Image 1 (tube, rainbow, N blue to C red):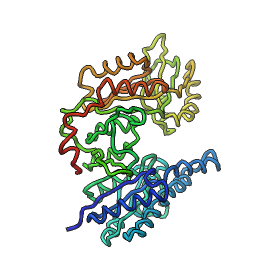
Image 2: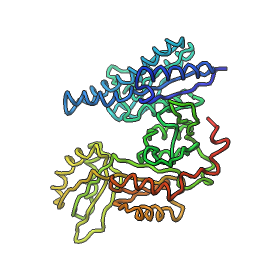
Image 3: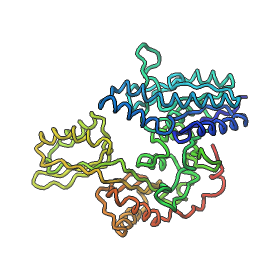
Image 4: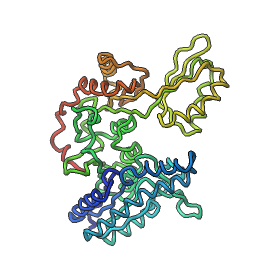
Length: 424
């Protein structure tokens, strides 16, 4: 009978320098001694990806997408090989593999590739020889076998996706994500001192938290875990302490409807003033944005007056300049009065399964923000969240007020017991 397989992922802060890489190696060695087969996915060391982006920007303002992906993939190659060397130094047999060598196939889009499939024959062969397999995260190759195979990267947080995808493909018993926090919290503990760690959170709730700005897990990684039934355990790299399990939560109806708060500063508001109120105008605005690869989130259209209306929506702050460049000729063609932007905004969300069908939560959120002197500029909802756009300067005030209003610091009756101890 084969030993259980565990997939572990270590983020950039976990492998930020030589000492931390050695610490990770010692943790892996202990897990290997316990009798588990191990596949370990690593991110680039510390701020390496940002440094590589800075180097590319110093060369050209518009780096070629292919060359940029080839450059960025080297960050993970570096940490994977160094971790393998550290394991060798501890007498542990290990090998580092690039994403392509690990059989990760993508759809071929540079910078934002999606995993199309995994052919893990090399990984399985190395595991059979008793090696710990270290895989460079965040990357893959664009085709199965052809002369024009290219290196592609998976976007920010892509190493999470690599780990969960490999866990699903290999039938792993566990997928552990090691980071610089102990798990998933009711809010960002750096901004809300009373934030409480959650022992368990459902896939749907975690998906919304990630989508609305919680940076502990990447959205696509949570989606993959949900679709494939992979239990994801979020743990601290720096201390041995219980983490948070992301999994199906059969007790969701017995928990607090609001499980956590998410926030996002990477947002900007765009308003087209006095746009003609006629069929087809929205398509003429949003089609070019989609073609430019700009993600549009919250959308509000005012009631039309005199054949005109104002249309407001949000885009990632980092894409604001491109959005303005894309929209300016369209605004002129539509003969709209003006195009305005505001990059000094942020989003705050309350998240919880069944929230949309529970009366009173929206009113309590809006009332809490009003009592705290926080003005709401836009509102968006889903089955499991309510999101408000506010001034960025009010964000910390809003988070603390909402955390208190929904009593998120209070342990839930079911926080203790088997849920906290379960692993898979």
